Structures are given as C-alpha cells and as structure tokens.
Length: 232
Image (cartoon, rainbow, N blue to C red; front, side, top):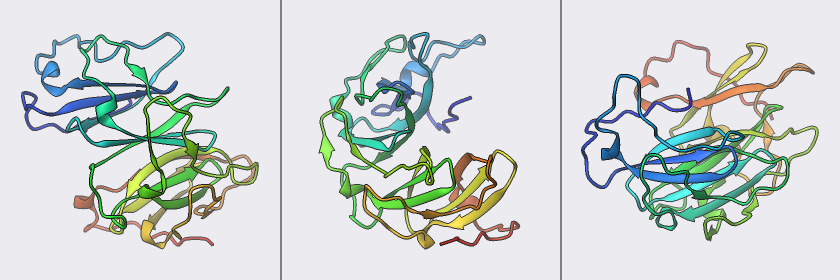
C-alpha cells in the first residue's frame, strides 16, 4: 500500500491524481479516469519492472511539486510541466537521479504561498530532522538534477522521508525497534537547505527510523499520547 486518497467526487473536473515513482518518474491523470473501478481493480500507472510507486497525491493540475531523494537532493517544479496522461501511461522524468539514489518523498503546494506558511520537514534514517522554507528551493524545470536538500553524513544518515508542514503540524516518528515520539514541528529549528538538522529521536546503534507521519488536524484535539520532547 502506497497511498490512500480521500475523494468526495470522482467525477470532479479539474482534479488530478499525481503519481511519483522511486526512480523519479512522474505522471498526472484526471481524477475522473478512476470513476469506474472494477472489482479486480484497474491500471493506474505503467511502471517498469525495476521501479515502484512512492506516492500519489490529489492536485488541481497547476500546483508546485517537490520531490526529495535518499541522498539529500530535491527538485521543485511547476506541475504544468507535466502533461495530463491516461491511466496506462508510464509518465515522464521528474528528477534526474544520481547513481544509487532514489525518491523518498513528495510534497505538493499551491502556486502562491506565504513565505512563512509552508516548510519542508526532512527526516533522516538516524533520527535527525530539519524544517526549510519551501521558497528556499528555487523553481526549476522538470527533469533536472535538483539542488541540495540536506547535508547527509554517516552520523546524520540519509533522508528517509519528507513532510509538508506549517506551524500547526504535529509529527509522529517511529523506529524499526518500536520507539516512538510525537513532536510539535514548530519546535524543530528552521534551517537552510544544505544543513544537517537536529536530533529528533535517540536511537540505538542498529535502529533506524521506520516511518514519520503528520497527525491529521482533526485528530489533534484528542491527545492521549505523551507529547514528545525535541532533543537538541
């Protein structure tokens, strides 16, 4: 399972499903093309045998797309650079990846945003993270090599995921050994693109971050879990 997309009306005009694969391929398909789903399912995207789907997002066809990679690179481009395609299509190149690199996360933002409204939160496999204003990533043409998103080192670890956050977002980070922490993201120091960030979670030597998710806003009122404390 890669994505669950809540949709009120599959026939809605002007809405698209935007797909991104591990090898940096992107594709957008009109939402209405998925209105007649058979019991056995339908093809959503054509994928090569050595590739796999990373994320799918609902867009309005003219937003700004952000792709981040495992080795700390990122690209931000106009969704209009990706033409609409049918369901079986394979898509086009979203980012030109270095050897052994792959896409770990996708974020979609409106075309016009307040500079302080949205930030990219990058989390590494060793439990470090940082928030960076989306405007620090210049708009580029789809298919480029991108820019440095995070300065990855053996201590910091490579990027495991990215999340789009604002000052109301709360994050839950879970490790492979079952350690968990809940963090108010505005307590994570804002930093520039090519920085290492701060420690979010203390991990044992062989432990790694397994998942990091933003808690939906409608679930923030019932805080039963213990609030996590950011480790500087």
